[in-house]
Image 1: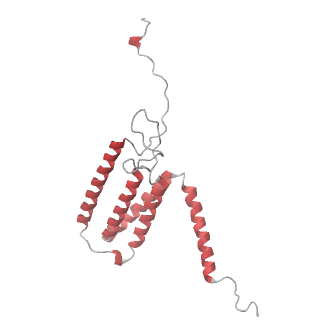
Image 2: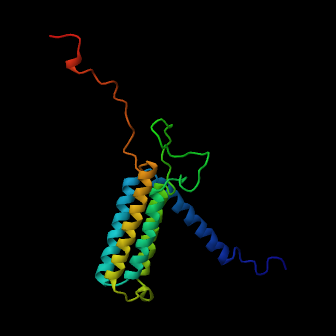
Image 3: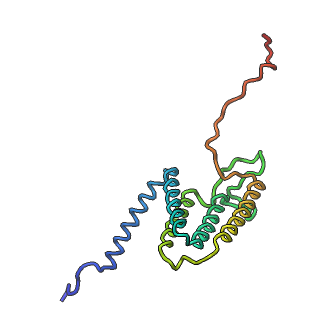
Length: 194
């Protein structure tokens, strides 16, 4: 009587196996895209353009766009903030230099660029899918939402810029600084007069 009803793996196990393989493949390509930041952002901006065109042509889903804007603003704050906020946690770990004589410590973001990109791309994908369901199309007067979001953006960025000025950090690196050597002395102070 052994083997009766034993048809092999259950459908749930087969589904979990396929799901696991698909997630591994997705993670593989995600890891391969890590060093190609420019191409990743180009793809994201293409996705943003498609989403914006869909919302524009449908003339709806403004509340979804507003929620997306608030989420992106939250991500932007994490992207522009240091890992250790000197205002909140004085620690013995890496901190931002406050004087010119302090040792240089690189700026470490609270939200790294790759995670920032991935979260924004995922958010736009979810918002795009939401535009296919009419239950998310709540009728609102969109200019009020836009004005409110702009006020939030300006106030939040003002606070973030004031924080940057107070603790003297710039969250962007403009490339590796190169040593150019000593400058030649000016010709007026030269001991030789020709």
